[in-house]
Image 1 (cartoon, helix red, strand yellow):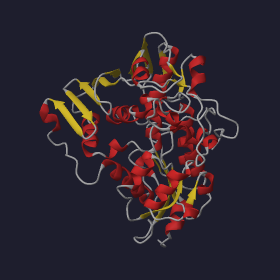
Image 2 (cartoon, rainbow, N blue to C red):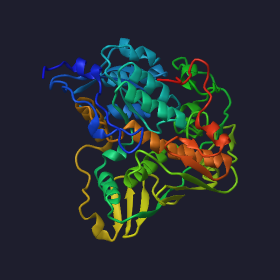
Image 3 (cartoon, one colour):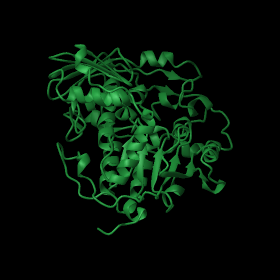
Image 4 (spheres, rainbow, N blue to C red):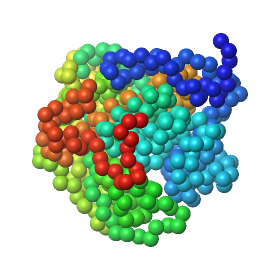
Length: 437
């Protein structure tokens, strides 16, 4: 076979897909055969979102085969800080992600923006021929996730979701144990009860000169700028706001529910029932800065449970915010970030201890390995979308205060038009989600 250049490989993308299990799921082993980049080739990366999470990609260092060539953030000072860390020049600092996607030296993008921007940027990146690493929570609504999967498949791009526990050795082994039948049929799963988002309506403050606030709000409503809202963990920050986030249901549920999906072998599907115990959520409205504790407590109600078609029931109760307890016919396994416990104890005697780089570094390495090999990554966008669907279903169930039936193939609620209206969100003019990718 004639050797192709790195650029030819990266642009040619992924070929030869094969569907397994459902109409949407693509086998990890079924993607592209093609020449890999040469040993001396580097992948040009754009960092989009240079806040706390984006900086965390830089601090441990990306693999030697990569090079960050542009830093992008609507807050220019943050982008400049990231640029200094990776020794790129002023001309490679931008505030608009669209200026990144037409650059020929950018092969891949890492998206660490607030979640209300994930879908639009990831879809546009796939359309521009870039591979994508995108943080969790993946989306603000179910429709966004399916469009992201469609874009990844149509343009044959590797899209990895930042659910880094899939690259943590004990979590990998623990999920494989459960999935492989070590405790028999899983009858019950106990996962953390996490808060839905609430209403953040803080008073206006002057917008910093270095911040493009209109662009920060993007597809979501244009809210008054407030320094707390701008921060991820303000009092409260955007991560608690219904306009910009799915709350901790998405933030930590993106880890906990992802472990459940992986361990149950449900990466291509999801639950079929949402069980809601209590009246609809009446979310608090924060009009002045204050502790998030009030919202955390109020927005954990009503209580939720999910049922899968095989009878497995997942209840949101107590437990680690990053994992879950699996109760089966032959025993019990608890999987947390970086640890696995079981009863009987001998079930986990072969589970490996953490070894090698941190889980974030290992997860990013897996993405680059997939770009080179053409195989789907460990946290492919379809898996991430199915995980995100669970916390979207939970938030919708709380909002409506009633049980719901879900069709994971059609990705619609059964016989509930009101609930189906909540599968998508309105967006500001100029920031529309494409109907077809």
